[in-house]
Image (cartoon, rainbow, N blue to C red; front, side, top):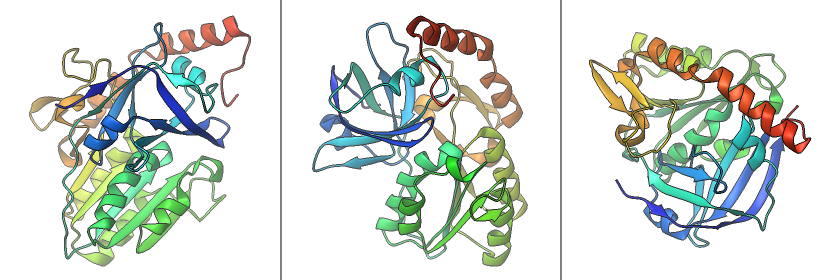
Length: 290
């Protein structure tokens, strides 16, 4: 495992993508030099902050900067939503996890991103396209407002499909519907790569298995230290216990015990709600996106 930890990482720019979505470019040249698609960082905003894992969405190697897209869903991400260009983040530790292999194939890759999962699937798609692969990309969200990186994903795709649950943009469907259609049409693909909410990845894996297609997913279990010490991110893959932080975060979707993982993700829901409400009340601010 490689990793670089420094202090006071400058925020170069902040872009508001939606009520509770923000894009950050952060100066972190050591991390950028070692980064591979699929890896993530652990961020701590200040001395009193918790450690949160965030997937690296993109890197600018000339500037030595990395891009994070963050949805405000809790205490720390609400706090991060208040940061502006020129502010600093105390700790950024990484790159962590295993980068995915980038290989050229005569068969197409099928890329599926759901909601905030569009952000972590983008660097994988970009890297695969850069070595000359044919990409069929499907992105989706509940509504048009929750879609992100549409133009970036379109630019790296040979075929591009957009769906929303409510039909407010693109086709009214879940991502599993066009995924099944593409796999039926193509016959054989190099791989399906799906990132999004766990339930989405579970059913994408089911569709892939039904069509005999390999599928890679990126997991987002509870994670604390990111180095395999705490065991919080353990998941069952096949008959073995794996740690998403050091063995993943990408795994064969057909081998994951999805029901176990989804149940474990709910472990601290009440504590997270209380922490968020307490932080916002102390500062007299509403939760981001509210």
